[in-house]
Amino acid sequence: MSQGNLNGKKVLVVEDEYLQARTIADALMEHGADVIGPFPTVEKALQYCGRDVIDAAILDVKVGDVTSFTVAESLCRDGIPFIFLTGYDREMIPPRFKLVPHYLKPFVGRDAPTALALAIAQLRSELPPRRPTKRPDS
View 1: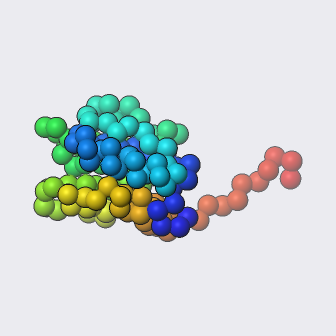
View 2: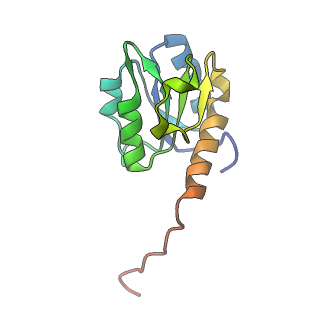
Protein backbone atom coordinates (compact mmCIF):
# COMPACT_ATOMS: atom_id res chain seq x y z
CA MET A 1 0.00 0.00 0.00
CA SER A 2 1.47 3.35 -0.95
CA GLN A 3 1.39 6.25 1.47
CA GLY A 4 -2.11 7.68 1.64
CA ASN A 5 -3.70 4.83 -0.32
CA LEU A 6 -6.57 3.57 1.79
CA ASN A 7 -8.69 1.97 -0.95
CA GLY A 8 -11.41 -0.12 0.62
CA LYS A 9 -10.18 0.38 4.19
CA LYS A 10 -12.93 0.99 6.75
CA VAL A 11 -11.70 3.82 8.97
CA LEU A 12 -13.32 4.83 12.25
CA VAL A 13 -13.10 8.56 12.99
CA VAL A 14 -13.68 9.81 16.55
CA GLU A 15 -13.62 13.60 16.67
CA ASP A 16 -15.98 16.01 18.43
CA GLU A 17 -15.02 19.17 16.53
CA TYR A 18 -17.30 19.18 13.49
CA LEU A 19 -15.05 21.00 11.01
CA GLN A 20 -12.00 18.92 11.94
CA ALA A 21 -14.07 15.72 11.69
CA ARG A 22 -15.47 16.68 8.30
CA THR A 23 -12.05 17.63 6.91
CA ILE A 24 -10.52 14.34 8.06
CA ALA A 25 -13.45 12.29 6.73
CA ASP A 26 -13.33 14.05 3.35
CA ALA A 27 -9.58 13.51 3.02
CA LEU A 28 -9.91 9.82 3.90
CA MET A 29 -12.68 9.35 1.34
CA GLU A 30 -10.58 11.09 -1.33
CA HIS A 31 -7.99 8.36 -0.73
CA GLY A 32 -10.51 5.55 -1.10
CA ALA A 33 -11.39 4.88 2.54
CA ASP A 34 -14.87 4.03 3.73
CA VAL A 35 -15.35 6.32 6.73
CA ILE A 36 -17.18 4.97 9.76
CA GLY A 37 -18.44 8.06 11.58
CA PRO A 38 -17.18 10.58 12.35
CA PHE A 39 -18.47 10.10 15.89
CA PRO A 40 -18.47 12.91 18.46
CA THR A 41 -18.75 10.52 21.44
CA VAL A 42 -16.75 7.59 22.76
CA GLU A 43 -19.92 5.62 23.49
CA LYS A 44 -21.04 5.72 19.87
CA ALA A 45 -17.55 4.88 18.59
CA LEU A 46 -17.28 1.81 20.83
CA GLN A 47 -20.27 0.31 19.03
CA TYR A 48 -18.21 0.20 15.82
CA CYS A 49 -14.94 -1.21 17.16
CA GLY A 50 -13.95 -4.67 16.08
CA ARG A 51 -11.80 -6.36 13.45
CA ASP A 52 -14.87 -7.38 11.45
CA VAL A 53 -16.15 -3.78 11.34
CA ILE A 54 -13.10 -1.52 10.86
CA ASP A 55 -9.54 -1.70 9.54
CA ALA A 56 -8.07 1.40 11.22
CA ALA A 57 -9.01 4.48 13.25
CA ILE A 58 -8.24 8.12 13.96
CA LEU A 59 -8.97 9.15 17.54
CA ASP A 60 -9.16 12.59 19.07
CA VAL A 61 -7.68 12.10 22.57
CA LYS A 62 -10.23 14.32 24.30
CA VAL A 63 -13.79 13.81 23.11
CA GLY A 64 -16.17 16.05 25.01
CA ASP A 65 -15.39 15.61 28.70
CA VAL A 66 -13.78 12.16 28.37
CA THR A 67 -10.76 10.62 26.70
CA SER A 68 -10.85 8.11 23.87
CA PHE A 69 -8.59 5.67 25.70
CA THR A 70 -11.35 3.05 26.10
CA VAL A 71 -11.67 3.03 22.30
CA ALA A 72 -7.88 2.81 22.00
CA GLU A 73 -7.79 -0.17 24.37
CA SER A 74 -10.41 -1.97 22.30
CA LEU A 75 -8.44 -1.29 19.11
CA CYS A 76 -5.23 -2.57 20.70
CA ARG A 77 -6.93 -5.79 21.83
CA ASP A 78 -8.09 -6.41 18.27
CA GLY A 79 -4.79 -5.42 16.64
CA ILE A 80 -6.39 -2.53 14.74
CA PRO A 81 -3.97 0.27 13.83
CA PHE A 82 -4.84 3.82 14.85
CA ILE A 83 -3.43 7.28 15.43
CA PHE A 84 -4.18 9.88 18.08
CA LEU A 85 -4.94 13.54 17.48
CA THR A 86 -4.53 15.88 20.42
CA GLY A 87 -4.32 19.50 21.38
CA TYR A 88 -2.59 18.40 24.58
CA ASP A 89 0.96 17.51 25.48
CA ARG A 90 2.16 13.94 24.82
CA GLU A 91 2.25 13.33 28.59
CA MET A 92 -1.57 13.22 28.62
CA ILE A 93 -1.39 9.94 26.68
CA PRO A 94 -0.86 6.96 29.01
CA PRO A 95 2.44 5.05 28.71
CA ARG A 96 0.63 1.94 27.43
CA PHE A 97 0.00 3.89 24.19
CA LYS A 98 3.54 5.25 23.84
CA LEU A 99 4.08 3.51 20.49
CA VAL A 100 0.85 4.84 18.96
CA PRO A 101 1.55 7.70 16.54
CA HIS A 102 0.12 11.00 17.73
CA TYR A 103 -0.33 14.30 15.96
CA LEU A 104 -0.84 17.69 17.52
CA LYS A 105 -3.82 19.84 16.69
CA PRO A 106 -4.43 21.84 14.76
CA PHE A 107 -3.94 18.80 12.56
CA VAL A 108 -4.23 19.34 8.86
CA GLY A 109 -7.00 16.89 7.98
CA ARG A 110 -5.58 16.46 4.51
CA ASP A 111 -2.57 14.75 6.12
CA ALA A 112 -4.78 12.11 7.74
CA PRO A 113 -4.59 9.52 4.92
CA THR A 114 -0.79 9.48 4.88
CA ALA A 115 -0.52 9.42 8.67
CA LEU A 116 -2.97 6.54 8.92
CA ALA A 117 -1.39 4.58 6.05
CA LEU A 118 1.96 4.85 7.82
CA ALA A 119 0.42 3.54 11.07
CA ILE A 120 -1.10 0.59 9.20
CA ALA A 121 2.21 -0.21 7.53
CA GLN A 122 4.06 0.06 10.85
CA LEU A 123 1.69 -2.35 12.58
CA ARG A 124 1.96 -4.82 9.70
CA SER A 125 5.76 -4.76 9.92
CA GLU A 126 5.60 -5.58 13.65
CA LEU A 127 3.27 -8.56 13.22
CA PRO A 128 4.68 -12.01 12.53
CA PRO A 129 4.17 -13.12 8.94
CA ARG A 130 0.99 -15.04 8.31
CA ARG A 131 1.37 -18.69 7.54
CA PRO A 132 -0.40 -19.93 4.46
CA THR A 133 -3.47 -21.90 5.33
CA LYS A 134 -3.97 -25.34 3.83
CA ARG A 135 -6.93 -25.67 1.55
CA PRO A 136 -9.26 -28.51 2.54
CA ASP A 137 -8.84 -30.19 -0.86
CA SER A 138 -5.02 -30.23 -0.83
